Each structure stands twice: as structure tokens, then as C-alpha cells.
Amino acid sequence: MPSKSIGIILIVVGVIMIAYTSFNYVTTERIVDIGPVKIDGEKKHQVQWSPIAGVVLLVGGVAFLFLSKKSST
Image 1 (tube, one colour):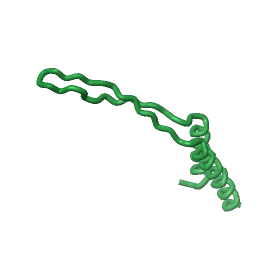
Image 2: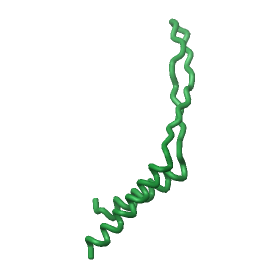
Image 3: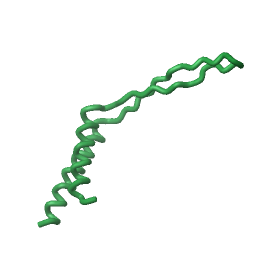
Image 4: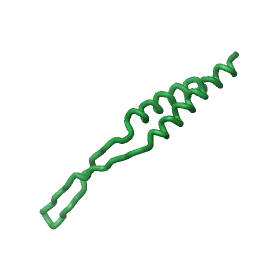
């Protein structure tokens, strides 16, 4: 994969990470399992990251783009 496309991907992921600093997902877990009685419950999980990680990816993507332009000329 050329460094130009890596740079574009890093920029896009960086912007998304800056805009959305977390996301939630739900899993189903078995709470009670006694013979024929089974009770399931939903448990919410939240994944968070610092917007600084998005800025680092954004800067890295821009650096990849500048390096690809210098190496191609």
C-alpha cells in the first residue's frame, strides 16, 4: 500500500477519533441459569479514547502525505 493512501486513511481515522471520543456496545449475559429457568440481561460497555490520539493520527497522516510527495518528485 503506497504511503499516500496510508496517509489518507490515517487522516480520516484521526478526524473520526477527534469527532467521536467514545462508542457504546451492548452484550447479552446469562444472569440466572437454574434448570429450565434462564434469564438473560443486557450489559452496556463504553469504549473511550483521548482526542489526543486522534490528533496524533491526523498529524501522522499529514506527515505521510508530505513524505509521499517528497519521495515522488
